[in-house]
Length: 172
Image (cartoon, rainbow, N blue to C red; front, side, top):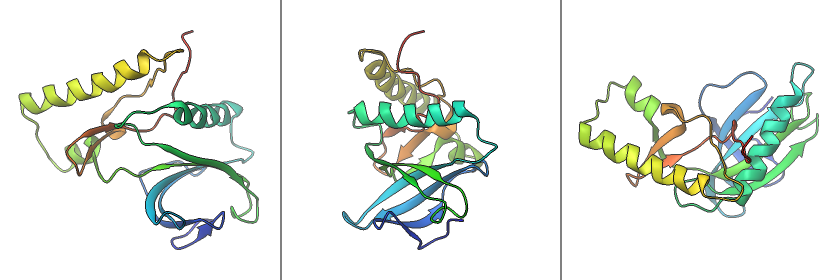
Protein backbone atom coordinates (compact mmCIF):
# COMPACT_ATOMS: atom_id res chain seq x y z
CA UNK A 1 0.00 0.00 0.00
CA UNK A 2 1.01 3.65 0.00
CA UNK A 3 3.35 5.07 2.63
CA UNK A 4 5.01 8.40 3.48
CA UNK A 5 8.10 9.21 1.38
CA UNK A 6 6.97 6.84 -1.38
CA UNK A 7 7.46 8.33 -4.85
CA UNK A 8 4.83 7.59 -7.47
CA UNK A 9 5.09 8.24 -11.18
CA UNK A 10 8.73 9.24 -10.55
CA UNK A 11 7.44 12.68 -9.65
CA UNK A 12 5.16 12.80 -6.61
CA UNK A 13 6.48 12.08 -3.13
CA UNK A 14 3.77 11.15 -0.64
CA UNK A 15 3.96 13.02 2.67
CA UNK A 16 0.90 12.22 4.79
CA UNK A 17 -2.69 11.01 4.41
CA UNK A 18 -5.40 13.68 4.47
CA UNK A 19 -8.97 13.36 5.71
CA UNK A 20 -11.06 10.32 6.46
CA UNK A 21 -11.58 8.16 3.41
CA UNK A 22 -12.78 4.64 2.59
CA UNK A 23 -10.29 1.80 2.07
CA UNK A 24 -10.66 2.07 -1.71
CA UNK A 25 -10.01 5.83 -1.64
CA UNK A 26 -6.97 7.66 -0.37
CA UNK A 27 -6.10 11.33 -0.28
CA UNK A 28 -2.49 12.34 0.29
CA UNK A 29 -0.56 15.51 0.80
CA UNK A 30 2.44 15.12 -1.48
CA UNK A 31 5.32 17.04 -2.97
CA UNK A 32 5.71 17.57 -6.70
CA UNK A 33 9.42 16.88 -7.14
CA UNK A 34 9.53 18.84 -10.42
CA UNK A 35 8.00 22.07 -9.11
CA UNK A 36 8.93 21.55 -5.44
CA UNK A 37 5.33 22.47 -4.49
CA UNK A 38 2.91 20.72 -2.17
CA UNK A 39 -0.01 19.09 -3.95
CA UNK A 40 -2.93 16.79 -3.18
CA UNK A 41 -3.25 13.35 -4.75
CA UNK A 42 -6.64 11.66 -4.67
CA UNK A 43 -6.50 7.93 -5.32
CA UNK A 44 -9.22 5.45 -6.25
CA UNK A 45 -8.55 1.69 -6.17
CA UNK A 46 -9.71 -0.40 -9.10
CA UNK A 47 -10.81 -3.27 -6.87
CA UNK A 48 -13.60 -5.89 -7.13
CA UNK A 49 -15.62 -3.87 -4.57
CA UNK A 50 -15.48 -0.71 -6.67
CA UNK A 51 -18.72 0.32 -8.33
CA UNK A 52 -18.45 1.57 -11.93
CA UNK A 53 -20.29 4.70 -10.85
CA UNK A 54 -17.34 5.53 -8.54
CA UNK A 55 -14.91 5.40 -11.46
CA UNK A 56 -17.23 7.49 -13.64
CA UNK A 57 -17.51 10.14 -10.90
CA UNK A 58 -13.73 10.13 -10.36
CA UNK A 59 -13.06 10.58 -14.07
CA UNK A 60 -15.74 13.29 -14.30
CA UNK A 61 -14.13 15.12 -11.38
CA UNK A 62 -10.78 15.13 -13.19
CA UNK A 63 -12.38 16.24 -16.46
CA UNK A 64 -14.35 19.07 -14.85
CA UNK A 65 -11.43 20.30 -12.72
CA UNK A 66 -9.28 20.45 -15.83
CA UNK A 67 -11.78 22.85 -17.42
CA UNK A 68 -12.09 25.20 -14.42
CA UNK A 69 -10.15 28.39 -13.84
CA UNK A 70 -11.08 30.09 -10.58
CA UNK A 71 -8.75 31.40 -7.86
CA UNK A 72 -10.83 29.72 -5.10
CA UNK A 73 -10.90 26.23 -6.66
CA UNK A 74 -7.73 24.11 -6.51
CA UNK A 75 -6.12 23.79 -9.94
CA UNK A 76 -6.05 20.47 -11.77
CA UNK A 77 -2.49 19.25 -12.37
CA UNK A 78 -2.50 15.64 -13.53
CA UNK A 79 -4.51 12.44 -13.93
CA UNK A 80 -2.98 8.98 -14.34
CA UNK A 81 -3.24 5.33 -13.39
CA UNK A 82 -0.88 3.22 -11.31
CA UNK A 83 -0.16 -0.42 -12.05
CA UNK A 84 -0.80 -3.17 -9.48
CA UNK A 85 2.87 -3.26 -8.51
CA UNK A 86 2.88 0.42 -7.56
CA UNK A 87 -0.48 0.27 -5.79
CA UNK A 88 0.03 -2.68 -3.47
CA UNK A 89 -1.84 -5.25 -5.52
CA UNK A 90 -4.58 -3.13 -7.09
CA UNK A 91 -4.46 -0.71 -9.98
CA UNK A 92 -5.27 2.84 -8.84
CA UNK A 93 -6.45 5.99 -10.56
CA UNK A 94 -4.89 9.25 -9.38
CA UNK A 95 -5.97 12.87 -9.59
CA UNK A 96 -3.43 15.57 -8.74
CA UNK A 97 -4.40 19.11 -7.82
CA UNK A 98 -3.11 22.14 -5.95
CA UNK A 99 -2.87 21.94 -2.18
CA UNK A 100 -4.66 24.69 -0.28
CA UNK A 101 -2.98 25.21 3.11
CA UNK A 102 -5.59 25.84 5.78
CA UNK A 103 -8.34 24.08 7.69
CA UNK A 104 -11.72 22.82 6.58
CA UNK A 105 -14.74 24.31 8.28
CA UNK A 106 -15.44 20.80 9.60
CA UNK A 107 -12.05 20.84 11.37
CA UNK A 108 -12.70 24.32 12.73
CA UNK A 109 -16.11 23.29 14.09
CA UNK A 110 -14.68 20.11 15.64
CA UNK A 111 -12.08 22.27 17.39
CA UNK A 112 -14.89 24.33 18.91
CA UNK A 113 -14.51 27.42 16.75
CA UNK A 114 -17.56 29.68 16.79
CA UNK A 115 -18.33 32.08 13.97
CA UNK A 116 -19.90 35.50 14.31
CA UNK A 117 -22.87 36.47 12.18
CA UNK A 118 -20.60 38.70 10.10
CA UNK A 119 -18.13 35.84 9.52
CA UNK A 120 -20.97 33.54 8.45
CA UNK A 121 -22.24 36.15 5.99
CA UNK A 122 -18.73 36.56 4.57
CA UNK A 123 -18.31 32.80 4.13
CA UNK A 124 -21.72 32.49 2.49
CA UNK A 125 -20.97 35.38 0.12
CA UNK A 126 -17.59 33.92 -0.92
CA UNK A 127 -19.05 30.44 -1.46
CA UNK A 128 -21.94 31.88 -3.47
CA UNK A 129 -19.49 33.79 -5.69
CA UNK A 130 -17.71 30.51 -6.47
CA UNK A 131 -21.03 28.75 -7.14
CA UNK A 132 -22.13 31.57 -9.44
CA UNK A 133 -18.92 31.10 -11.45
CA UNK A 134 -19.63 27.35 -11.72
CA UNK A 135 -23.29 27.78 -12.63
CA UNK A 136 -22.56 30.39 -15.31
CA UNK A 137 -20.26 28.01 -17.22
CA UNK A 138 -21.57 26.35 -20.35
CA UNK A 139 -22.60 23.71 -19.51
CA UNK A 140 -23.15 24.68 -15.88
CA UNK A 141 -21.11 22.81 -13.27
CA UNK A 142 -23.02 21.67 -10.19
CA UNK A 143 -20.83 20.84 -7.17
CA UNK A 144 -23.61 18.92 -5.35
CA UNK A 145 -21.67 18.43 -2.11
CA UNK A 146 -21.22 21.78 -0.37
CA UNK A 147 -20.61 21.01 3.31
CA UNK A 148 -18.13 22.09 6.02
CA UNK A 149 -15.52 19.44 5.10
CA UNK A 150 -15.47 20.71 1.49
CA UNK A 151 -14.89 24.34 2.40
CA UNK A 152 -11.35 25.36 3.30
CA UNK A 153 -10.41 28.50 5.20
CA UNK A 154 -7.03 29.09 3.61
CA UNK A 155 -4.04 30.43 5.47
CA UNK A 156 -4.57 33.50 3.27
CA UNK A 157 -8.03 33.89 4.94
CA UNK A 158 -9.89 33.16 1.69
CA UNK A 159 -12.56 30.49 1.32
CA UNK A 160 -11.94 27.62 -1.13
CA UNK A 161 -14.34 24.99 -2.45
CA UNK A 162 -12.77 21.54 -2.75
CA UNK A 163 -13.78 17.95 -3.51
CA UNK A 164 -15.60 17.90 -6.81
CA UNK A 165 -16.24 14.14 -6.49
CA UNK A 166 -20.02 14.53 -6.80
CA UNK A 167 -19.82 17.13 -9.57
CA UNK A 168 -22.33 17.22 -12.39
CA UNK A 169 -21.29 19.02 -15.53
CA UNK A 170 -24.63 19.26 -17.27
CA UNK A 171 -28.17 20.04 -16.28
CA UNK A 172 -30.26 16.86 -16.14
